[in-house]
Image (cartoon, rainbow, N blue to C red; front, top):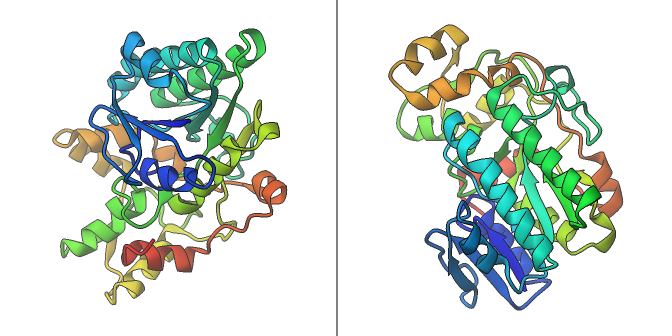
Length: 307
């Protein structure tokens, strides 16, 4: 049995579909889990609760931790250490392998223009400090407690039917509301985005590859160098619209953040948009002979909600 913790998130649904290539028994765990394949085992659990987490993992061969907590630093500081501790303890107890879907917040600012699996850990944000601690917890449990695990890391993501993608929030959602698109800090810096269907396929591949464990992997991401302006224009063209947009500066974030909490949360991550942000997935692509989707095709699918 293979189990997804956080099955209702943007990657949970496509991952559940991908896992059917490897197992007939998929367990979906969330506070209110929903069917994906029609024959999934649904298991309601709160992962901040140790007993519920233990029961959710019992009987699993491979566990995928893909939850997305509310984008709030206090929530992250309170809940992430508890969730990770509960999951690690249960995986060790039940001899389950762990695949953790991670982001890039723990990397030092100087690494953002070219991120690899060996990039320096040195977060400059409070959210990054939380993510760095999760990274350390897993590596420590691998080294000292017998945990079998790997970290699958993604850049900012996008794709069809994806609700929380920066590209959707900043561009397509705004255009669909008849508003201008926006971009954070600097429209002329390069930015990488990981296509969710590629990420789901790759995560399933990693979880079912024996010698992939014990390592960090960057999920397959196009190496094309596009700026924020390029993305906006490409999306506008696909939507048959004029590319109208504005820049959300740090000053605007400060002012708007007084009234809109999510903007206040974004401000500390603005450094990822004031410089080039390039995510290198060469290691995965060479190991699995995998070619990520092009941005042109990925954006076409995103705009048209085509899987």
